[in-house]
Amino acid sequence: MSSDRSLRKHFSIDSIESDDNIQVDQNYDTLFTSQNSLSNRNRNDLDAYTLNYRIIKTTLLIFAWISFGLNLEIIGPTFEDLKIYLQVNYSSISFALVLRNIGYLILTILFGLVLDKYSKYSETLMSIASAVIAISNFLMPITRNYLIQIFYFLFQGLAQAIYDLGGNYIILNLWSSVNTSPINAMHAGYGMGAILATQMAKQFIKFDPYHTNSTLTISNTTSLILKSSDINLKTPYWIASLIALIISVLFYLSQIIETKNRLKYEHNRKQLILLSEEFNLDDASIGTSSSLIETKMSNVIKKMFLGKDKLNNLTQNQLNLILIQIVLFIIVFVFNQGYFTILSRFMITYLTIGPARLDVEIFIIIQTLFWAFFIVGRFLAAYLAFKFDTIKFFMWVLIGNFMVTILFLIPFLTEFKIFFWIGVSLLGLCSGPITPTGIMLAKQLLDINSFVLSLFIVGLAGGGIIFQQLTGALLDFYEPNKTSWMGFSQANSAFILPHLASIASFLCLSFFVPIYLIHRKIFNFYRK
Image (cartoon, rainbow, N blue to C red; front, side, top):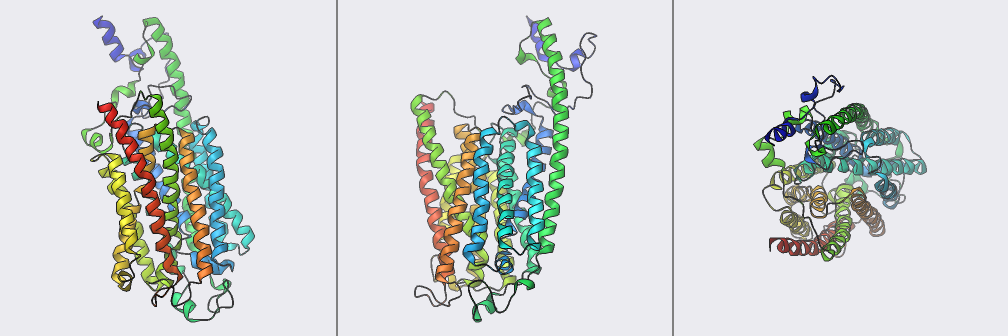
């Protein structure tokens, strides 16, 4: 009996290398190991990959999200310039961004239905998506036709759906059964890319809020000061495009490596199964030499990444509560993305034309602070997530985010420029962790599959569509070039932006409260 246990414990590829009857591929990469069949890209076991492999793949995903943030958020600091370049109003440029979200929404639904089936090609899909984003950003600064431009935005939305859903799927399954630290680290890359976008674009921005406000306009579309021919955004957009192209190549190479190792693994697995039948061993006894090399994380890594186990053995009533939570999470993501859309897309309008009345140079600095604290928030969340109960942590983040947002509704505070330096930084700190923490929290509580994940991303896309179009329409209706609004002499219609943001933030928090209460009920049941 003891000899059989010993055999089971040490059974691996190395242990059968001397067997003349079994041919094992010696070129099998020990970085890539699994206790499960990888023919279906099953990553739901922490032993599916070695620690080194997970770190390397996570690093690639972080750089991918840097490129993601750079290419998608470059529209933020260049929003007013792009409006002038295309000779359109706020509603029109907002519609282009809405169309991007529509493409994002549609393909998210379709892609979510088939992602599990084609998950072993995730890297190839990510490579294609990154290439599409690169091509569209390359063409944007050399295309003045608005109708053609909106198709670029549409294709970006389609690529964004694959990028977002595929990347989240990979990171969630790479680090299955752990807390929110890895996904927060990956999504922090988005903020890094946004900072790069702001810094790259600042010297090419021609929009001057003071001249725009002090000069009559022919219409809502064309300023007497700036013409379409004055705008040149080629350099920042083309640099962003090049980085996306590099990421595309890296994902393509990653797919080649992963496919090669998966085929070798399947070959070795078949040989091990044959030998297991000879020794009368069960499948759980079959391992690989690399699984003996790196089966345990260091203590530091354990503290950083290992979280609580998922809840299992739910009753029918508890399953019904899970379905309710899925719907509530979707609504939470709708209002969260609406909130984030207002901050990221219209910040230049609020800080330059709005109550702050900052010049563009100061705006660039403050927006950089926003993204810097956005990154800090995500990395801080990655650290705190294993220190505190994730659902309590998420609740406090939402509360803090709402409290900071309502400060911008106090006219007295907006009279001090220092307030915008501090307030916008706090907005970045509080809003940064919301999306990745929410996605990973849902994964922990609900054990979601790729389709449910796609529904969450649909919620994000829907929130972007609704609030992008609503905000643009309101700005056009109330004309932000006026010097007063609703009785405030030092404000104009741009002052409506924090009002919309605070409503979205409040609703996001309100719809999460039932999730928290439902979770405590389930958790208390298991404690009994």
